[in-house]
Every structure is written in C-alpha cells, then in structure tokens.
Amino acid sequence: MILVRFNVTFPGGTAIIISTLMLLEVESPTDPFGGSFSGLLAQTSVFAVIILLLLLAFSLLSWTIILRKWLTFRQISQKSQAFAAMFRKALA
Image (cartoon, rainbow, N blue to C red; front, side):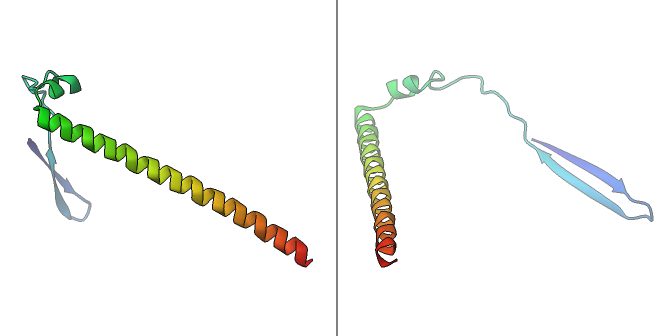
C-alpha cells in the first residue's frame, strides 16, 4: 500500500492537496489449493461436497422453474394479444 500526495497551486494562491492511496497487487508466494477448482474440491470434505451438490441441484431446479414460468407468461401474453385483436376486429 502506497500513499501518494500531490500539492497543486492554482493562480491566485489557492492550493489543494490531493492524497491517493494506491494498492499494489502482489502475487502470493504459495497457492493453497493448487490454483484450480479441482484442487480445491480435492481438499474438501465429503459433507461439504454433498452440500455443494445439493446447492447446485436446487439452483438448477430454481432456474428451471423460472424459465418455465417465463415461457408460460410469454405464451399467455401472446394469446391475450391475439384475443384482444380478434375482439377489436369483431367489434368493428
């Protein structure tokens, strides 16, 4: 972490100080999990893997429900617009 300060003086004597804190990214000397997802998964307990699989399954189930509802509402909207057009045509 580096603190940088700039002193700026404007014509007429007005001066401001700008302070900036710079964070430098430093590569860690050792990678605790081998740098890969499989390395992380290899060091995870069986219980944690089961929990992760359950979360994945329920996430997929949730997205399936969301997609089905979106498709259903889209179909309902299309049928509603078709009905409204047919109804307006019948009144004319």
